[in-house]
Length: 196
Image (cartoon, rainbow, N blue to C red; front, side, top):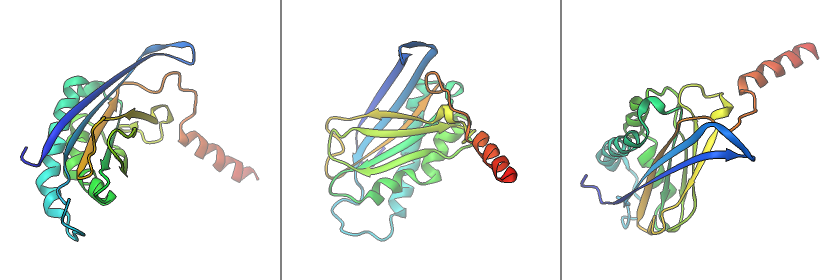
């Protein structure tokens, strides 16, 4: 992993009570985040990001996926997502470059047998900023019960010339989901238009 990897942080959250009511089963979220040197830092505007994407993204995707499925076995994953934050001396495009490539995302998607895209955030932030990692169901994109967000922070990252890259998964829906899937809304709205 010769791409300036400084550290890997993992976060595990289990929710047992929500809204004053116990969950049917705990809602467990896992995030694995890597902090690495921004490969484009100090170079000014770089037109072609592809060489560094090809050098880093597959290895980063493989390493984060390996660590996440060690904490949450692939068959337990119901929802997933990704996030990247670049430090203040970088461009948001630098964060985006490392996660918006199939060479990164397919490692995770294939490992957990997902078919949906990985929902995402890409931002510029200072060290210790609260970061959000959104998730959706790994194969049913309209399943609102699995529209989830995990919040996490790494106290010393991303530094100005770093990028933080994370993947996350959940083994359940939100606690006590009570919203219909978006496909139900679409059917209802279609019928309303037909009956108008």
